[in-house]
Length: 383
Length: 136
Image 1 (spheres, one colour):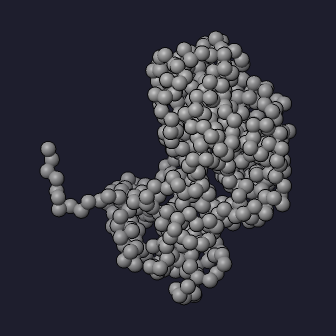
Image 2: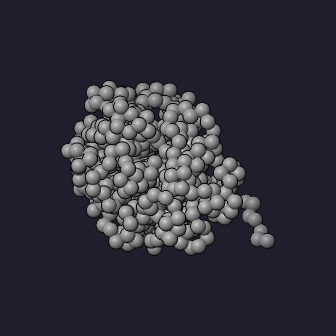
Image 3: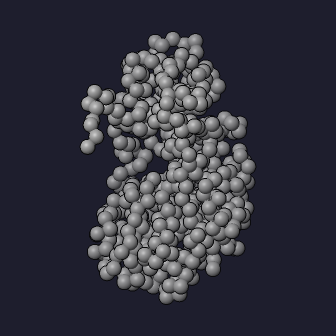
C-alpha cells in the first residue's frame, strides 16, 4: 500500500523531431521546469527515478541540477512498460523514509538519434526470443504488433480500417494542443488511408511518433506536498506487473494471442490499493504505441467487451463528453512520444483542472504504460 | 571449487538446438516428459508443470496460418523487398514463425501451409501455401 504520496510538480521541454540538444540538456530543462512548477528548489529533491533505457547519467543530473543530497536513484526496465513504474519506485522510497522527494524523468532523442522504428535497437540475433523475430524479419515493434492486429481483425470480423478512429481521435485532441507535434493538424480518414503501410494492417498513423524531448514529475509525501505550491494530485495506486510466459509485443504462443498477460495483475493491485474499480475511472491515459494495442487495453482493462473497442472509439466514446475521454493531450500518436511519461503529466493537468482539452468532471484517472510488455500503471485522483 | 566437466557441450542459449536443427532441414520442438506439454519456443523448463525433463520431437512441417503481417519496409540487408511473415500452428500443436513463399498475394488465416528450408531465403524457415511448389 502506497497511499500518502502525491505528485506535486510536472515539467517538460518542447517536443520536436530534432531538438538540437543532448538528452542531458533536455533532462535538465525538464527537471528545472518541473521544480519551477512545484515551487521547489534542488535542495528539496533527494531522489531520481528513470528508465534503464535512459541514457543520461545520474551523476550529470545531480551536477547540473545541484541536488545537494541525492540519496536514492533507481531505474525501471522494459522500456515504455516502466513509465508508471518510475512513480511506483519513487512512492516506495518516500513511504519507506529513504527519500523525501523524488523526480521521475525521461529524456530521449528518438527522432534525431536512435529511432526505435528503424530496427537500430535490435541486438544481434544470437540468443533468446529476439532471434525468433529477427530471423523472420520482425525487426520492429510495429511488425510484431502487425501480426497481433491482423488476428484481432480476423477474430472479430472487422475491416482493415477498423483502427482508424483511434488515430483520428488522438489527432483531434492534438490539433488543439500547442505542445503537440500535430498542433492544428487534425487527421482526415482520407489522409489516414492514403498514408503508407508499415506492417499490415498498421498504417503510418496507427504507429506512435518518434520524438525528441524530456518530461519530469516530482513526487513527495502528502505531508510535504503542503510545502509546495499548486494542487497536489494523489497517487491512489501504483503497480507493476509481469505476465506469465510474457514475450514483449508478441504473445504469439499464448492460447489467446490477443492476451495482454500483465493486465490482470495491474487491475488487481490498482483496485486493492485504491478501492476504485479500474473500469469506473472518469478518464484514461493509455499508452498508444500502436492503435490495436489501445483497443486491447480498453477491452482488457474492462472498459469494453472483447471485439468492441474499435466501435467504442468510432462512436466517439473517447472524445470529451464520451464515456471515457482518452489521451486528451493527443498521446503518442498526436502530441509526442515520451515513453508514456507525458501521459502522466496530462493526467495531472486534468485533475488540476488546467488541461488544454479539459474534461468537465474528472476525479479519478487511470494511467497505463506500454501494454504487451512487463508493465506498470497508476490510479491518480484529486485529494 | 567444483570440477568443470569440459566434455559437456557449451549451451550458449536454450534455443541453439532449434536453430541448428533448422539449418539441417529439421523442424523440432520440445516435449515435456513429465506432463506431455508440447513446447515452443525452446525453454529450460515446462511452463505448465515446471519439469526440466524433456525430449525433442520433429514436426512434419504442415500446419495452418494463425495470423500474418506483410512488412513493407525491409530494415536489414537480407530482407530486400516487402515480405510476408506468417505465424503457423503446426499439426503437432505448436506455433512457429516463418516467411511466406509462393505466389499467393496474402495468406488466408486458416489456410494450410508446408514448411520449406530453401537456403536462398533470408529466413531459415519459410512456409509455402499447400499445393504450391517451392520454386519461387
